[in-house]
Length: 363
Image (cartoon, rainbow, N blue to C red; front, side, top):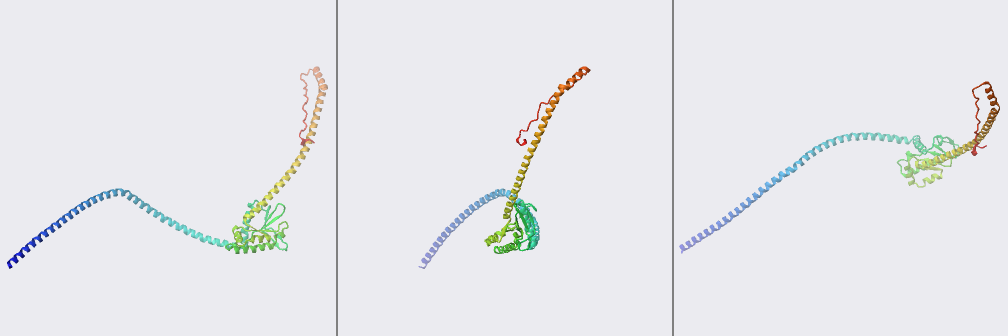
């Protein structure tokens, strides 16, 4: 019983070992097949990689040929960039020098501007500056100094005070227009419109109090207040629209270069028309005098013609007497004395002076 059991156990063990070996061999064969397939796959992949690398090498060679000109261009570009950078550095250096010079000039300009502002705060300097602009406007209008206008003319107003306007402009009919150019421009500059209008109103009141028209009897009852700056009046009127009307009510006309030029052009036109009228009157008188002298000369011509006519008649009578009396005796003497030369016979004068036919030459 024990022997059979052992035998069975041995057989069973042998069968199990056989089965295990078979199973192990199958697994080993399967693993070997899998490894072989993996190896073949790896070999195929390696071949593909080699082909890809060979293709990449060809592409790289082609790309290198294509990139070679680009590399040369980049090299030249780098050279240009270095040259540009060097020039930029030089330009910045020069620019720094110029900026320094500009800064120095700006400092000098600020100093000069401050001096100008200080000078303009002086009433005398301010007046001279305005008078220069006023003279330019007047001369541009075609008026002549000491003929059509005068400067710094003295007078005494109705209150007995001595006044001296900056300029008087003479009118064709003997009148004058008084112009003042001492407006407070330096004080007005930089202020707002309300402050500008207030300062201008103060100067208007001062001009109205001088009553220039009472010092010059032929002047109309207004004074022209000259403002060389158009913007100051515009700003003041924006803030105080009644400034112009109130100034006119006090006998002061606010005039900028444009409005004053229009007024002076009108005056210059009046002077030209007066000159044309005077020339026409002189031409008329000259024509009348010439006509009278032509009549006198016509009388003299007629008398001279009559005298010439009588002289011709006297000449012809003398010639007739000479032919009928003197030449006959001369020919007889020639015949008796044997003179060979003929006595010349003067020809009579047939033409007579023509009487003047023009009416102006008849007396």
